[in-house]
Length: 118
Length: 118
DNA sequence: CATTCATATGTTTATATATTCATATGATAG
DNA sequence: CTATCATATGAATATATAAACATATGAATG
Image (cartoon, rainbow over all chains, first blue to last red; front, side):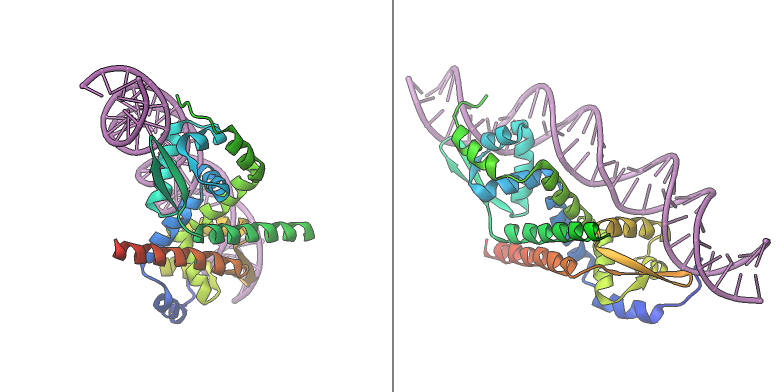
């Protein structure tokens, strides 16, 4: 195995790490953004609130698939919904969604800038 | 199936959506943050650059597992590495990592604030 | 240049999850 | 109160992927 010692460093880092639970919750949140379908739904809702069948039609997917994904988004408080007769409209829950995605976007852009310079 | 019409809305939204490729790349980026092990590695590197076996020891995982995850992080330009003799040190590639995670963190906090008010 | 240490990589397996299909719920209109 | 439209949900399946295991690479040291 490995021989060299780094206990001092490990002790220092260990003290600064958040709890496993928090790290897990954070990862779970980002996991929600880590799916193309959900990303498409979020970008769609940037433009306007929409009913389930409109999103399904927009993405060319089954209503059931969209419903399942909307549930994931709602459980994570990224979207919310309101009923109007038989129709249920979904909309973005808050502006964190935009800023989280914007940060990811920035990273993608810079990543590509770097690629050109290689 | 569904009857009500929303072609006008769909046309509008369709025009504003980024390309499938971009949406997919964005989702793929967030997917990298969507794993507890990788999240732990990133938080560890917030504190200090570290060699592979130090991270493995810190997380109580096999060296191979850490190596595989570091590769994912490096492919996505979230970390970078430098060699020093036999040892390879990994470190955060840039500050986007911090700000992306910080945004996710903020959302978690607010999510919990809301829960208390329910 | 052979050995050892640190890391990387290929393969396999187990688990998570996105989608589909079938069906249930829930609201409205007649 | 029955039929219909919009959505939700449960179960099954197919795919993605994290971790483990075995092994390969690559640098340093004697």
